[in-house]
Amino acid sequence: MNATTIYLDNNATSALDPRVLEAMRPHFLNPGNAESRHSAGRQARRAFDEARETVAEILNARPDEVVFTSGGTESNNLAVFGLVVDDQGRPGRIVTTAIEHPAVNEMIAHLEARGFVADVAPVEFDGIVDVDRMADLFYDRTRLATLMLANNETGAIQSVARLADLAAARGIPVHTDAVQAVGRIPVDFAALGVATLSASGHKFHGPAGSGVLLVRRGVRLSPRLYGGGQQQGRRPGTIPVPLAVGFATALDLWRRESEARAANWRRLSLRLVDGLRNAIGPDRIVPNGPADPAKRLPQTINLGFLRLNGDALLMQLDLAGVAVSLGSACASGSTQPSPTLLAMGVPDDCLRSSVRFSLGAFTTEAEVDQAVTHVAAAVTWLSR
Image 1: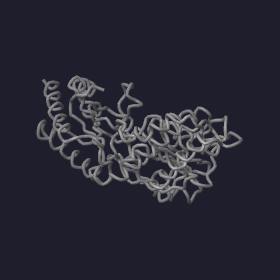
Image 2: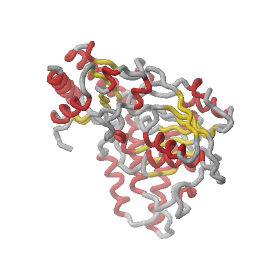
Image 3: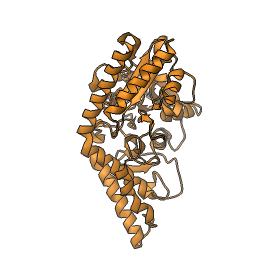
Image 4: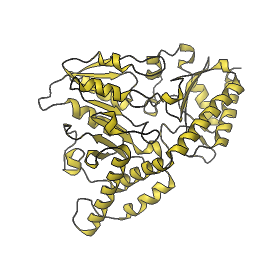
């Protein structure tokens, strides 16, 4: 990344915290396998167990409920597949939403091709799912309900605990994709009441390739991978100790700094939006997502720039050294409008011109001010 780049795309990925790198470094140099009984292996096992205990403590889970993975996509796939596929391979129904990440939606589409039925719950105009209406879609053959904890495009925080309560009455497990929430807002696995929860380290300044799947004790997952008994057989393979340590360290740093980070994100988000309104005019900008800041992630801002082409705006900002996004990085190659914004009923005049700004722990006030200047200049040039 160019040193002059103003990086405001942290929901896609975030820079590795140098403190995390230092914590990982000695474990890259230790050749021990955490399953080996010699001293190098025992050293690796201690580091892995400490990382698992740290994650469990911060997310209010038990250590044996923590499964380390390669990231959110793997965690989501392990959960969705594992919760719905039984020994007989009989298809059933899945209740989901139109705002789920491709790592969930594409897995469900794969299951639909195998005979499963997906019932899609509607989304309100502010990007929040009405979970009571979602529960109306529960049937006798419903095997699973999926609802992300916070949306990757709008930051809208969903009522996952309420859905889990409604689903428990019908004996239906709930999976929540918490990839955008963990490391940004407090997440309490026990209080949510879900069967499984996914998280990814690179969203909160941990290493890419690190993630976790929390699996509530007593929940049975059909295996997706075979080849070893590591991590209770749920994710067999040699344990990546450096990545587990990196994930746990990044999460612990967020815990220590969470109040300061959240306050700074709220302040900078307001500065960004107010600056753009003053520079461009309030009638040219439409916020997408909940109006109440308490109902969205503090570092996610999604704005529609009326009557502009989003791709052209993104290109102009990239040339100016400002990194932002039009939506999910995992769907960035698509020319189709955002499924999330479509589900929210965002009008055509801002549907294709909506830009996501996402802040990180290292975003500065000066960077936000420079971004405002560059965005205003790009909008003026494109409006000629």
